[in-house]
Image (tube, rainbow, N blue to C red; front, side, top):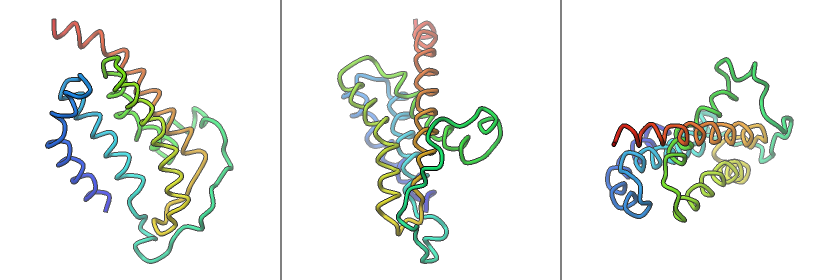
Length: 163
């Protein structure tokens, strides 16, 4: 199911990125990365879990066992924490590459809000079979922050390459 959502996201990117780029005052590649980042997050987090496809939903509770960032040791190996961080990095890079405009500020707020929206939907829509976890909020925000940092650092390099 998430592959289907990803394909739909790519189709949307192809058709909407030119107009969105104009609206944001950004290049088409940055806009395509931005739209891909949003689509990737939505496809990976809001598609039904394997158990949900078998008719088993979530219990409608939120796991609050970790409030805070994951230990570095958890982020240096492949696990749910590191994957949740990596999931938001492309979106963050695109946000960091956007020109500093009012529209970009709104997109930045939307990107930050996305992790809260995802966890809220996972909590409320039990049929998805997804679990709301406070740890995911921190991991996703860390990935977004890392990506924004990479994007901001890359801006002068990309500007120099264009000139």
